[in-house]
Length: 332
Ligand code: ADP
Ligand code: MG
Image (cartoon, rainbow, N blue to C red):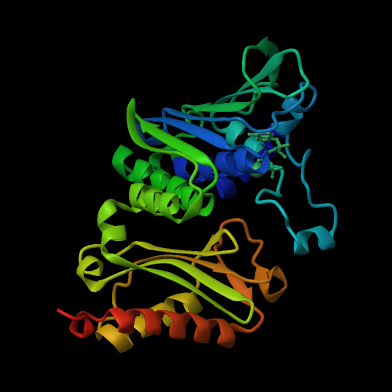
């Protein structure tokens, strides 16, 4: 079965960024309110995620690293309303088959923390007592140490880290209430306190996207027939310098969607005669019943029941906000 894990790992574990995504989603699933991430050499040498979530009981620790043991999907019905972010029950098994992995955890009731350790696909998980406050630390060392072919596909340390950082940023923008810190090669990249209320949310966006973005953006907050759109759209002064700052969340989940990009671009083009590089951090809140979340783990897609209405709402909201701010229209 460990060999099957390693083969399956090709689908899930592509690079350090895909590992960090799985680890962070697990921490959020476990109800973590604080997540600390430590990375060395772009994540290839070390990825460490420490959380203060529910933890894992001793007996479940080795199981957490075995394939399909923990899948939350019991039937198709579950699939249709995936309440939590994780659902495949194989990410850790896959990662452990291509790395040296230790997982240390302590639950609220336990009088002792436990650690499970694996090395590649040949080693059975080894369980031993450990010291750890409530929560879990997963440490992944030497990613792809036993799969040289896969290792060759890794890019430079800088590139791998920037992919990884992007994953952390997305999650940090999707959960303002959770504290995140990220360190790379001993240097703090960011340290985000929980953000409650508009001012703190603004501060978090500034930390994640850079202060220039929030300074040169419009804040949006609009509600119509069960849809609410809020967040920030960059003004053209900013848009010209930064091309790829586009974050769109539906009910807290980051998506990349043609309909959304089209609506935003069209609003920009209509008002500013420049729809090429809109920048935005936007949150759409809708009744979950009107949106199908595509459950494919690596795709960021949704399907709106009434795409036209969503498009119109996005377009008209942004159009109005941008038009009111058009530089030529401002007094003085
Ligand atoms: P999945 O998340 O799809 O169930 P994973 O392989 O990612 O599969 O994780 C396996 C299991 O290990 C999870 O279902 C969960 O029970 C447990 N687990 C993993 N990470 C954590 C964590 N940080 N805190 C608590 N439990 C965890
Ligand atoms: Mg998971």
